[in-house]
Image 1 (cartoon, helix red, strand yellow):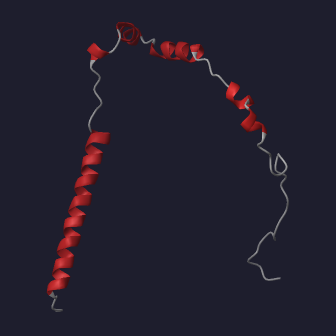
Image 2 (cartoon, one colour):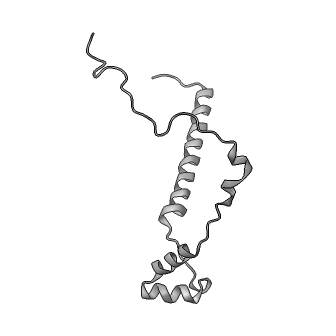
Image 3 (cartoon, helix red, strand yellow):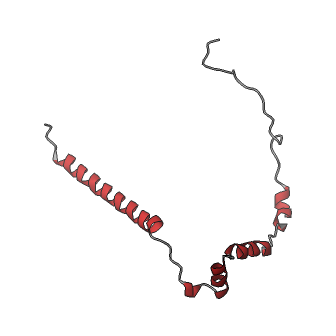
Length: 106
């Protein structure tokens, strides 16, 4: 049986403490991230949303909100974007390289 020096015992003790801290952090992340259910306070949700969710129309609200979204893409026509250049040919052409089976001797 090998005799452990004081330095080795201190090093093992520090590693055990580090392992304990890592396990504790992992447990906290799992508890608050995955295991704890997200609860919604109904008093903070507008009345329109709660009524439609009861009727099963929450998807309709999402679709209506997406249809109303106006995306402004005018920034793509700015001067700075006109200096961008395309490097290479698009679409990329497929060429044959190498051998069919590189493990077979020549």
